[in-house]
Length: 484
Image (cartoon, rainbow, N blue to C red; front, side, top):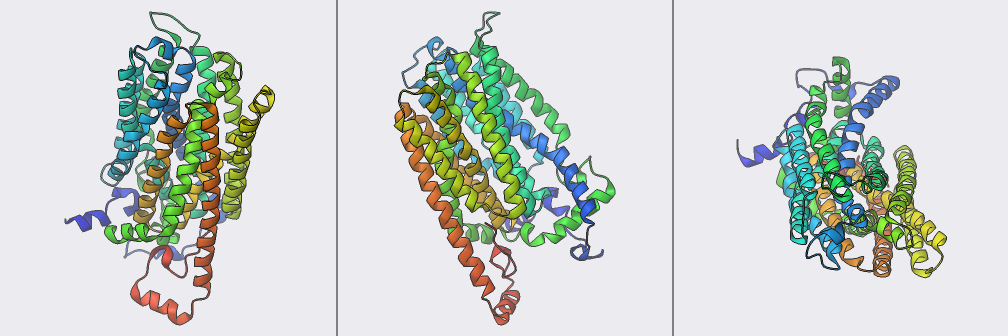
């Protein structure tokens, strides 16, 4: 088999299992009882969302716990720790994360999903356990680099995995669950840290116990994940034969969204699409805010005059609020297919939050309230921007290529976030600026997609017939409508 053939058959059983057998009925003409489909989707949610959500929960918990550990004395205990050591350690995580994200996530096309995801989780869990025994700054940096390399593949795999089971209008809410898991992770991290950081025993300090507990939790889940995760709908242990048949029908209905196509052709389509660049740069701005917020919030609150226990507890409330807002916005986005209005509104709210933090210096209550305002829009912008690309890019290869680019650009924000929070004022000012930039790019995406839809609506029947004769595929076809 040559490389081109390999690329066209790359996602193992995940897509192939949905394909229609030429000798069987045309599943694209089969109608599903709405009640039966609703029941099927609920079952998918029960067995897929919690598994993927908890995996991302642990990913975010293990990358963000450096802020909790720093608030609990790690900075003072490590040898040769420079004054900006936490900033450097935060940034270096994303160096290999960004470099390894695309190549590692592409392995999802070559290896079984459960083998790959289980392996990377066990490996990075071991790194987190090792962090509990670090003694100097050099070891901290080395472990953060390795952690970033192992975590790099997880989110792209999770986001693409969702598209294998759900329709376009179902994706936003399920992707939202990943970011809700991230927000809950930060909240849980604050709560558990407030307890574990006070423990000392067996020659270990609280921040070491924190690393050991969270690392062990990840290793155990990596093992469990191997047995829970299905490769595709046809091998899903939780679906019966009737439900597997319905999944084939659902795939047939969305074939123009799920088709593979020639690998090189689809990649070129992605690289020539201006929408992917709007999405990527907007993601960079939003993720800069996200990583700064999730890593340094507890330290920002601590600077307001609270001790490390209360700062960790107070940060949990911010993350819970952000999660609630995001769930509501994602549900509305899926129901009404309106994402850009919420993206623009959410980004403006976050800009206002940072403006308050910059404008108010000595009123603790107002500054803490401003942290809630910032969190209101951050997770919404990060999640819905990615979802907008996933729902408007037709074809697995184009969609996965663009999503890899989106996440690579976005995770550069982690490098930026680690460097801008040398002081809170600089961090807030840069965060406000990049979120404003993202707001403009959300509007640009709306203009771009609206213009494309109008061009398709204005096409004559002769132009449509020409597309059919030329074999035009993907979101460029006249019958594919972009949703915003």
